[in-house]
Amino acid sequence: MNQAGDLLLVKSGGPAVFHEWVDGFAEASSGLEVREWDDPSVRDDNVTYVLVGQPVGDRISRFPKLKAIFSGGAGVDHLTREPTLPPHLPIIRMATHENAQTMGEYVCLAALGLLRDWRRLALAQERRTWDPFLGTRTARTTRVGVLGLGHIGLHALEMLRGLGFQVHGWSRSRKTIMDTTTYAGEGELQPFLAASDIAVGLLPHTPATSGLICQRTIDWMPHGAGLVNAGRGSLVNIPDLVAALDCGRLGGAVLDVFESEPLPADHPAWTHPRITVTSHVAGFATRRTRAAYVVEGMAALERGDSPPHLYLPDRGY
Figure 1 (tube, helix red, strand yellow):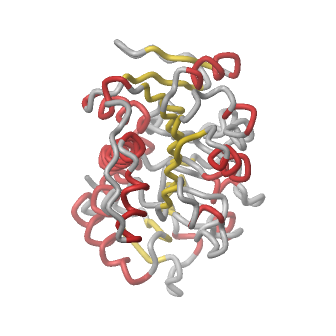
Figure 2 (tube, helix red, strand yellow):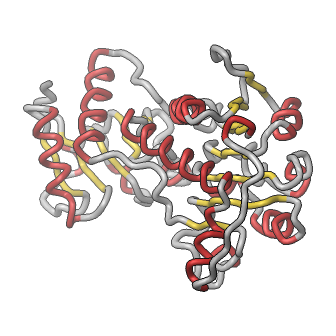
C-alpha cells in the first residue's frame, strides 16, 4: 500500500525501538516516510500523520498539514486532556486483533486465577508453606460479567465461554450478542453485577466510568465475588476495594491498570493478600501489527472513508 508524500511522526516506545516501527511500516507501505518524534530535521509543515502513545503537550497543534492522529494504544486520554489539541482532527484508537487476543488471554488467566485462588498459592510458595485446599466451584458454575462490549470485550467473552464460564456483558448502550445475556445503561448495572461471580473491567476512561466500581456498586456483587480490571485504572475506587477485600465482602482482585503508573512503592495493592498486581501488561500488539493497522487507517482516510475505531468525543471513547 502506498502513502507516497506522507510523513508520519512516531512517539511510542522511545528511540531504542524506533527501528521496529521503521521496519513495520516499510513492510506495510512502500511510500510512507516515518520519522522519530524528536528528529530535529523534521519540519512541522511536512508532518501529515502522527502516532502517539504518550502525552505530547501542545506540539500537535503546530502541524498545519496534519490529517489525523493515531493513538499508540486503545485509550486516548493522553491526547484528549491536552487543551490545545485541534478539535477537527480525527483520532483513531489502536484496536488490532492481536491486542484483543492478548487481552482475552489475560482476562482468562485472571478469571482462572481467581477461580482457583492462585494468589493464595503464590503466597504459600513465598512462605514455603504446604497449603492444600479444595476449591468451591468450577468454571461451569461461575458467572463472569464483562464490563465493556467493544472490540476487546467481545473477544474476551468468547474466550471465557470457551473455558466453560457462564458469560454475560454490560455496556453503556444496548448490544445484542448471540447466546449471551446483555445489560445496558446505569439502570441495569445492579442486576449485571448481582449476577457476576467475577466482574471484568474493560471500559474506557470517561466521566461516567470514573469510580464506577466503589462501595455502592461492590455491595451489589455476590458475597466473595472477584474483580478483574484491565481497562482503565480510574474505574476502581481503590480504598473501597481494599475495604471490601479486608472484610471479606469480595474474595479477590486482579489489577493491571491504576490511575498513577508506575504504581508507587507504598501503594496498598502491592502487599494485599487478596490482590494480584500486574504492570499494565494485559494487552499488547507487536509494532509490526500496529504499523499495518495504522497504514490501513490512513488508506481509509485517503479514500474518504471513516476508519474503524474512530474516537467520538460525545461518547468519550
